[in-house]
Amino acid sequence: MDFMEIVRKRFSVRKYTEEPVTEEQLALILEAGRLAPTGANYQPQRLIVIRQKDGLERLRKGANVYGAPLAILVCADHDDVWKRRFDGKTLTDIDTSIVTTHMMLEATELGLGTLWVCAFDPDVVRREFDLPAHLEPINLLAVGHTHEKAADVRPRTTRKPLEETVWYERYQERTAE
Image (cartoon, rainbow, N blue to C red; front, side):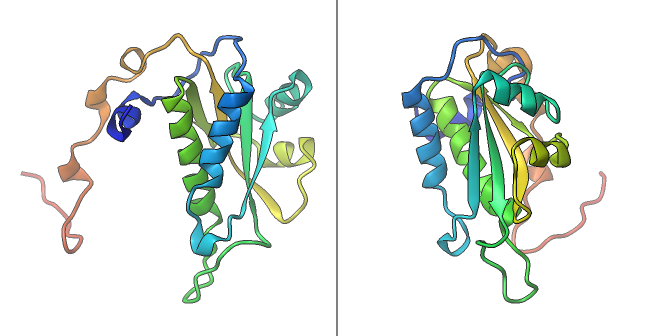
């Protein structure tokens, strides 16, 4: 499958089968995350794989992963991240988002469905998974097998045309015609 095919095939899955993600699939997904670029190669991502029944039940206290048999809690280590020298901005959200994207696209290439979850209670997740103060839970990636197809869930016409999201050389407000 070529890259654009993977991108077009990926969609947010909210219905999973009970079939587990194999060890081989999980290893490839995690390797895709490991290879993701991060600011100055600091690699601040800390990934917690949640697939046991008790872990998924603890996760449900603060997040909905829609019955996925596997979730990856993507955290950022604030003690090990590159900071922009001009304003001190840390790349925690950016780096962990790149890592999550790589894992999400690898899962798609493997024929699995995913859901990127940002709507969760970080205090509950922090408590349930014993996260120390320097680790921030950024997002969750639910992963599993699905019967759904992208066309059944999201028609491709819902994407804005490039003319609404791309500018060349500089930003300029557009007027309605």
